[in-house]
Amino acid sequence: MSDDPDLERRFRRLLACYPAAFRREHEQEILSVLMAGAEEGRRWPRLAEVADLLRSATSMRLRTRLRTSWAWEYRHRRVTVPVRVISGIWLVALTVILYGYGLGGWWGVLLVPAAAAHFYVAYRSLRHRAQS
Amino acid sequence: MGTRAMQEATFLILTALAGSSQHGYGIITDIEQISDRRVRLRAGTLYTALERLRTDGLIAVDREEIVDSRLRRYYRLTPTGAERLAAEAARLQANAVVAMSRLDPVGAR
Image: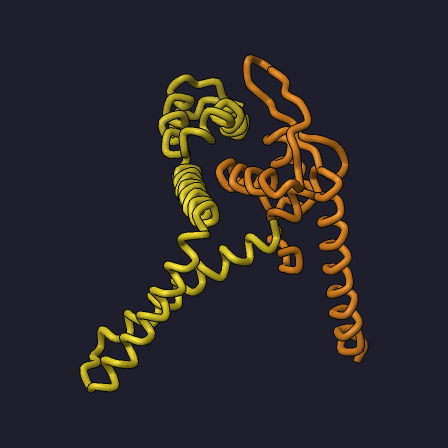
Protein backbone atom coordinates (compact mmCIF):
# COMPACT_ATOMS: atom_id res chain seq x y z
CA MET A 1 0.00 0.00 0.00
CA SER A 2 1.51 3.32 -1.09
CA ASP A 3 0.25 6.87 -0.70
CA ASP A 4 2.95 8.67 -2.64
CA PRO A 5 1.39 11.60 -4.55
CA ASP A 6 4.02 11.36 -7.32
CA LEU A 7 3.21 7.71 -7.94
CA GLU A 8 -0.50 8.49 -7.96
CA ARG A 9 0.03 11.30 -10.47
CA ARG A 10 2.01 8.98 -12.74
CA PHE A 11 -0.62 6.26 -12.56
CA ARG A 12 -3.28 8.85 -13.34
CA ARG A 13 -1.35 9.93 -16.42
CA LEU A 14 -1.28 6.32 -17.65
CA LEU A 15 -5.00 5.93 -17.00
CA ALA A 16 -5.59 8.86 -19.33
CA CYS A 17 -5.02 6.35 -22.18
CA TYR A 18 -8.36 4.66 -21.42
CA PRO A 19 -11.58 5.68 -23.19
CA ALA A 20 -13.18 8.69 -21.46
CA ALA A 21 -16.41 6.87 -20.60
CA PHE A 22 -14.51 4.07 -18.90
CA ARG A 23 -12.32 6.55 -17.03
CA ARG A 24 -15.29 8.46 -15.65
CA GLU A 25 -16.67 5.25 -14.24
CA HIS A 26 -13.54 3.40 -13.10
CA GLU A 27 -10.52 5.70 -12.74
CA GLN A 28 -10.79 6.12 -8.94
CA GLU A 29 -11.35 2.41 -8.57
CA ILE A 30 -8.35 1.28 -10.63
CA LEU A 31 -6.23 3.91 -8.94
CA SER A 32 -7.05 2.38 -5.54
CA VAL A 33 -6.09 -1.06 -6.87
CA LEU A 34 -2.79 0.23 -8.28
CA MET A 35 -1.92 2.11 -5.08
CA ALA A 36 -2.91 -0.85 -2.92
CA GLY A 37 -0.58 -3.07 -4.97
CA ALA A 38 2.39 -0.69 -4.73
CA GLU A 39 4.74 -1.14 -1.80
CA GLU A 40 5.45 1.74 0.59
CA GLY A 41 7.85 4.34 -0.75
CA ARG A 42 7.64 3.47 -4.45
CA ARG A 43 7.50 6.56 -6.64
CA TRP A 44 7.41 5.15 -10.18
CA PRO A 45 5.11 2.60 -11.87
CA ARG A 46 6.84 -0.64 -12.75
CA LEU A 47 7.54 -1.34 -16.41
CA ALA A 48 5.23 -4.38 -16.30
CA GLU A 49 2.43 -2.21 -14.88
CA VAL A 50 2.91 0.38 -17.59
CA ALA A 51 2.80 -2.32 -20.30
CA ASP A 52 -0.29 -3.90 -18.75
CA LEU A 53 -2.19 -0.61 -18.52
CA LEU A 54 -1.29 0.39 -22.07
CA ARG A 55 -2.31 -2.99 -23.43
CA SER A 56 -5.57 -2.99 -21.54
CA ALA A 57 -6.37 0.60 -22.59
CA THR A 58 -5.68 -0.25 -26.24
CA SER A 59 -7.86 -3.35 -26.21
CA MET A 60 -10.65 -1.41 -24.53
CA ARG A 61 -10.48 1.34 -27.13
CA LEU A 62 -10.56 -1.21 -29.95
CA ARG A 63 -13.48 -2.98 -28.34
CA THR A 64 -15.42 0.27 -27.94
CA ARG A 65 -14.76 1.22 -31.54
CA LEU A 66 -15.74 -2.22 -32.84
CA ARG A 67 -18.92 -2.18 -30.80
CA THR A 68 -19.99 1.23 -32.13
CA SER A 69 -19.20 0.18 -35.73
CA TRP A 70 -21.28 -2.97 -35.39
CA ALA A 71 -24.08 -1.02 -33.72
CA TRP A 72 -24.13 1.36 -36.67
CA GLU A 73 -24.14 -1.54 -39.08
CA TYR A 74 -27.07 -3.21 -37.26
CA ARG A 75 -29.05 0.01 -37.00
CA HIS A 76 -28.81 0.68 -40.72
CA ARG A 77 -29.02 -2.94 -41.87
CA ARG A 78 -31.93 -2.22 -44.21
CA VAL A 79 -29.46 -0.28 -46.32
CA THR A 80 -26.11 -1.85 -45.44
CA VAL A 81 -27.08 -5.51 -46.01
CA PRO A 82 -28.23 -5.06 -49.65
CA VAL A 83 -25.34 -2.69 -50.36
CA ARG A 84 -22.83 -5.15 -48.93
CA VAL A 85 -24.31 -8.17 -50.71
CA ILE A 86 -24.33 -6.34 -54.06
CA SER A 87 -20.79 -5.02 -53.48
CA GLY A 88 -19.63 -8.53 -52.61
CA ILE A 89 -21.22 -10.06 -55.70
CA TRP A 90 -19.81 -7.26 -57.85
CA LEU A 91 -16.31 -7.82 -56.50
CA VAL A 92 -16.52 -11.55 -57.15
CA ALA A 93 -17.85 -10.91 -60.67
CA LEU A 94 -15.10 -8.37 -61.29
CA THR A 95 -12.46 -10.87 -60.20
CA VAL A 96 -13.90 -13.57 -62.47
CA ILE A 97 -14.14 -11.17 -65.46
CA LEU A 98 -10.64 -9.77 -65.01
CA TYR A 99 -9.02 -13.15 -64.66
CA GLY A 100 -11.20 -14.50 -67.47
CA TYR A 101 -9.73 -11.92 -69.81
CA GLY A 102 -6.25 -12.57 -68.51
CA LEU A 103 -6.08 -9.17 -66.87
CA GLY A 104 -5.57 -10.47 -63.36
CA GLY A 105 -2.46 -9.87 -61.37
CA TRP A 106 -1.11 -10.16 -57.84
CA TRP A 107 -3.55 -7.44 -56.73
CA GLY A 108 -6.38 -9.83 -57.50
CA VAL A 109 -5.86 -11.38 -54.09
CA LEU A 110 -7.09 -8.11 -52.55
CA LEU A 111 -10.53 -8.40 -54.18
CA VAL A 112 -11.40 -11.75 -52.66
CA PRO A 113 -10.95 -10.82 -48.98
CA ALA A 114 -12.77 -7.54 -49.65
CA ALA A 115 -15.74 -9.48 -51.04
CA ALA A 116 -15.55 -11.93 -48.14
CA ALA A 117 -15.57 -9.05 -45.65
CA HIS A 118 -18.74 -7.59 -47.24
CA PHE A 119 -20.49 -10.96 -47.08
CA TYR A 120 -19.39 -11.55 -43.50
CA VAL A 121 -20.67 -8.19 -42.23
CA ALA A 122 -23.97 -8.68 -44.07
CA TYR A 123 -24.27 -12.18 -42.63
CA ARG A 124 -23.67 -10.95 -39.08
CA SER A 125 -26.19 -8.14 -39.48
CA LEU A 126 -28.81 -10.64 -40.62
CA ARG A 127 -28.03 -13.02 -37.79
CA HIS A 128 -28.25 -10.15 -35.34
CA ARG A 129 -31.80 -9.47 -36.50
CA ALA A 130 -32.68 -13.15 -36.15
CA GLN A 131 -31.51 -13.09 -32.53
CA SER A 132 -33.07 -9.83 -31.40
CA MET B 1 -20.89 -18.17 -27.57
CA GLY B 2 -21.18 -20.17 -24.39
CA THR B 3 -19.51 -23.29 -25.67
CA ARG B 4 -16.05 -21.82 -26.01
CA ALA B 5 -13.55 -22.58 -23.26
CA MET B 6 -13.13 -19.85 -20.69
CA GLN B 7 -9.81 -18.08 -20.19
CA GLU B 8 -8.13 -18.94 -16.93
CA ALA B 9 -8.20 -15.34 -15.69
CA THR B 10 -11.95 -15.20 -16.31
CA PHE B 11 -12.46 -18.52 -14.57
CA LEU B 12 -10.47 -17.39 -11.54
CA ILE B 13 -12.28 -14.04 -11.30
CA LEU B 14 -15.66 -15.76 -11.32
CA THR B 15 -14.38 -18.25 -8.75
CA ALA B 16 -13.18 -15.41 -6.53
CA LEU B 17 -16.65 -13.84 -6.67
CA ALA B 18 -18.48 -17.15 -6.14
CA GLY B 19 -17.93 -17.06 -2.37
CA SER B 20 -18.88 -13.45 -1.71
CA SER B 21 -18.77 -10.04 -3.39
CA GLN B 22 -15.29 -8.48 -3.53
CA HIS B 23 -13.58 -5.29 -4.64
CA GLY B 24 -10.77 -5.07 -7.22
CA TYR B 25 -7.78 -5.55 -4.95
CA GLY B 26 -9.63 -8.21 -2.97
CA ILE B 27 -10.13 -10.19 -6.20
CA ILE B 28 -6.40 -9.95 -7.00
CA THR B 29 -5.27 -11.22 -3.58
CA ASP B 30 -7.95 -13.91 -3.53
CA ILE B 31 -6.89 -15.21 -6.95
CA GLU B 32 -3.30 -15.28 -5.75
CA GLN B 33 -4.45 -17.56 -2.93
CA ILE B 34 -6.74 -19.75 -5.05
CA SER B 35 -3.98 -20.33 -7.59
CA ASP B 36 -1.36 -21.03 -4.92
CA ARG B 37 0.60 -17.82 -5.79
CA ARG B 38 0.86 -18.82 -9.45
CA VAL B 39 -1.44 -16.11 -10.84
CA ARG B 40 -1.28 -12.46 -9.83
CA LEU B 41 -3.53 -10.40 -12.09
CA ARG B 42 -2.46 -6.86 -12.92
CA ALA B 43 -4.90 -3.98 -12.60
CA GLY B 44 -5.33 -3.42 -16.35
CA THR B 45 -5.94 -7.09 -17.11
CA LEU B 46 -8.40 -7.32 -14.22
CA TYR B 47 -10.46 -4.34 -15.32
CA THR B 48 -10.53 -5.37 -18.98
CA ALA B 49 -11.97 -8.70 -17.82
CA LEU B 50 -14.38 -7.13 -15.30
CA GLU B 51 -15.70 -4.76 -17.94
CA ARG B 52 -16.30 -7.61 -20.38
CA LEU B 53 -17.93 -9.80 -17.73
CA ARG B 54 -20.21 -6.95 -16.72
CA THR B 55 -21.27 -6.28 -20.32
CA ASP B 56 -21.99 -9.99 -20.73
CA GLY B 57 -24.08 -9.98 -17.54
CA LEU B 58 -21.95 -12.54 -15.66
CA ILE B 59 -21.11 -10.12 -12.84
CA ALA B 60 -22.71 -6.95 -11.46
CA VAL B 61 -21.75 -4.10 -9.16
CA ASP B 62 -22.78 -4.96 -5.61
CA ARG B 63 -21.98 -1.80 -3.65
CA GLU B 64 -19.40 0.95 -3.19
CA GLU B 65 -17.38 1.92 -0.16
CA ILE B 66 -14.84 4.61 0.61
CA VAL B 67 -11.90 3.30 2.64
CA ASP B 68 -9.05 5.70 3.50
CA SER B 69 -10.50 8.15 0.96
CA ARG B 70 -10.16 5.48 -1.76
CA LEU B 71 -13.11 4.16 -3.75
CA ARG B 72 -13.82 0.45 -3.53
CA ARG B 73 -16.43 -1.00 -5.83
CA TYR B 74 -17.62 -4.47 -4.92
CA TYR B 75 -18.64 -6.95 -7.60
CA ARG B 76 -20.83 -10.01 -7.26
CA LEU B 77 -21.67 -13.02 -9.41
CA THR B 78 -25.04 -12.88 -11.20
CA PRO B 79 -27.19 -16.04 -11.58
CA THR B 80 -26.02 -16.24 -15.22
CA GLY B 81 -22.42 -15.95 -14.04
CA ALA B 82 -22.90 -18.72 -11.49
CA GLU B 83 -24.39 -20.91 -14.20
CA ARG B 84 -21.47 -20.28 -16.58
CA LEU B 85 -18.92 -20.92 -13.83
CA ALA B 86 -20.62 -24.18 -12.83
CA ALA B 87 -20.69 -25.36 -16.45
CA GLU B 88 -17.02 -24.47 -16.94
CA ALA B 89 -15.97 -26.12 -13.68
CA ALA B 90 -17.82 -29.30 -14.68
CA ARG B 91 -16.14 -29.25 -18.09
CA LEU B 92 -12.66 -28.82 -16.58
CA GLN B 93 -13.33 -31.54 -14.03
CA ALA B 94 -14.51 -33.98 -16.69
CA ASN B 95 -11.34 -33.33 -18.72
CA ALA B 96 -9.12 -33.66 -15.66
CA VAL B 97 -10.74 -36.96 -14.67
CA VAL B 98 -10.07 -38.43 -18.11
CA ALA B 99 -6.48 -37.14 -18.08
CA MET B 100 -5.82 -38.61 -14.63
CA SER B 101 -7.38 -41.97 -15.46
CA ARG B 102 -5.30 -42.30 -18.64
CA LEU B 103 -2.10 -41.28 -16.89
CA ASP B 104 -2.69 -43.57 -13.96
CA PRO B 105 -1.75 -46.90 -15.63
CA VAL B 106 1.50 -45.29 -16.83
CA GLY B 107 2.39 -44.26 -13.29
CA ALA B 108 1.56 -47.74 -11.95
CA ARG B 109 3.85 -49.52 -14.38
